[in-house]
Image (cartoon, rainbow, N blue to C red; front, top):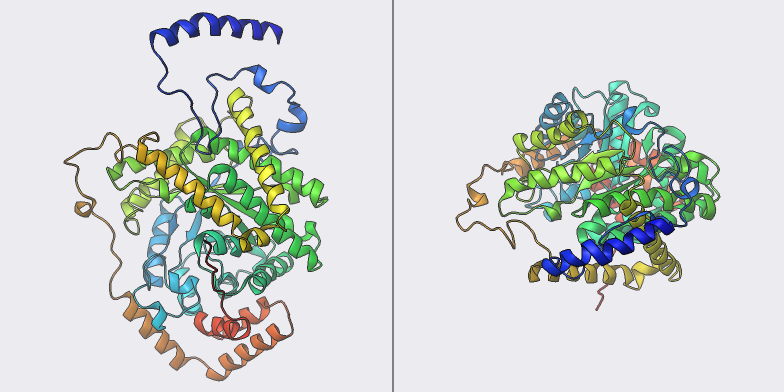
Length: 556
């Protein structure tokens, strides 16, 4: 190392000093999006004291810094997804079948807000929102149409659903049975992370305690009956979309995970019984190297936490399996075609970071549901990088980079410090209750916006390289949801209620209410209710009657 130090000293006093005298650098300091100062140059000196075997290691081997599987993409590519769903069940079925025909291996379901908040399409609270930001699902009848001619034993389905996750999963299970696919063969994920809804997204219904109970009902039920299902996707992605930086995103995700694991253990569940089917979602933001380092730090931090804090014995319990997604907040309405480049960068982050599934946004997603053409471009972006770039020929190609390894360690260190701070508040529930998490995200958001407003953070087409006569987005071909969707869904609900067995529905809902009173696992009761064609609104009405609704506090 002495030789390197001497050579670096010579470089700084010679070539570097001369270059700076002739042409100063663009600014005095450089930093990542999370405010981590970026040095001019990284060398082996920055990795002094790093134990390769213990801190970096090998793919598929603890602490999994270089990947959760031994062969990574040389053995199997990541699952390619597009977040999609809109309008009626028929509309969404058509889009899903189109995407599968284009080579997409996994579906990522978007539900409209009434479905996410437990209202039927004919509820006054749903007016104007039916089918707008996702597909409207009122009952099992809708779910049957959505997956018509889509074999559930061959397709992996990710559902972005939280408060009503048990109901949508129950419908998926029922559709599988109707197709002749047993629960044990179903593959997919329910997002089901209600804690982040209280913080960052807002599609909660019930108070925290019963909400967490529903999460654990899925975890417990699927561990016993749906072993290939990822029961809980703990989602830092939405922290990032709300304004958190990379360190906060990682720390808050881990703090959520700690809460769920602790609550599951309080319920009497062994960590190795349920932890192997937990998965995680993190965003793809703007700083390529920071995002790659974040994914690598996440795997290492989680593996250590599971082994040391929770004494997990099964190696599968220590795997931080990542579903990475394009952050929609990085898409820009000015010169929107440039978003294709941003999405390609997101895909690159996910690949270099060793994630297990990647969702690519579409260039027009900031305005509307993507067109088929835009969705195809987003999928083709992943396919081009997978098959034409050479990125998948070797595992963790940035491993050993002086910069990436240093940044990985720094992110892990900062996230660990933030987790310890949250632990001191009594965990994530305490940090939510006292407003700490909201404040942290808000302050990070303000810091970023100030940098954009000042021009320090360049956003191409927005605060630099703008084109005065650029074509307005309104003149582009964007997708529009049929205004008649709401009427169609209202009529469908009315017809369903007229044709179903009313006594069977009543009995299933009464059994659900009794199960709540007895504090039973509610999944069997919910499955029975959806099979009777009880609607999502009717099922949630029973739960609202027992638990009430959560009212968010105001933080000053």
